[in-house]
Image (cartoon, rainbow, N blue to C red):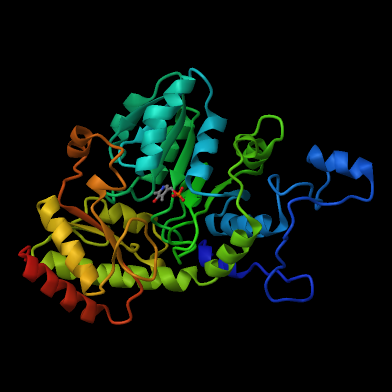
Length: 399
Ligand SMILES: *Cc1c(COP(=O)(O)O)cnc(C)c1O
């Protein structure tokens, strides 16, 4: 039977301490022991089922990690306080001084800044490439390369990575393929296509209520053990631990992720088709005109659609700002960064979430001033929303 990520989440059953239908929240930072010997063994990581201190692990964090590992089809997972708190320790764990990373050039601004400005301080260098060209990716690999890094669907340009193709390159050159799947949960299952490690910002679709930040690394037991090692584990020692109360609330929100993703995708596909027909420069992986439409189709778990993210280009930052302000005024969405909310969110990435990327590099990768990134919400009647958006576009003169 074909791997279905939502079924894997659904099959997990947890009960609370008193038979509660949700698991109990472990509201403690530290745990008592009857025997001093067990405390020592737990510290060393040899006492399964025992807890010592909540930066190391908590029952609530383990439940959430298990659900995310099930969703991605990896052995296990480690949750963290933010998406960056998941991505940065993984890269620090896999690379030491002298090592090299080949990364997509269209990635989340924070990840880009980390690789461009921060890791060079530890003598870890990154070559940024057009990830859609496998020959260019391979040519960038050196004898020091340890990691291939990309986003399944990139932020904000919605480029699609050929994960199976990249995985074959990674195997050939003995690299770890790390994929950020924040934009395409359920729709794409990178580990099933050959990725070694899958990261998410849980802040976005997976939590879906814009009330918290969170992150996860999904991978092999060996990798997660390494990250959590008390002596040299980057997640353990850099300390970006998720709080148990948050882990419990994110797990509850995950129970509706499949329903939300279907609606996000349905609404985004509807708007993308209409916008394109109206003559707007529209980018959405579900459109035939998207350069990687067929690749996405080949990789996807079809029932979850092409995701909730789309972009339009309205020509200039002034027009983009005018349109976004008007749409917010008409209550069609919020002028805000982030994504995956019930409400549509829009922003101009060039001057916000991707502003870490220098202007000339933005131009080179096709990130223009007038680009608006939409995270399409869960609107009940998307046709009504479309007509209201269209009249805003006519009012500011982009249609
Ligand atoms: C938001 C985001 C991140 C960073 O996650 P935080 O939770 O904000 O730390 C990383 N990658 C992508 C693709 C994102 O959208």
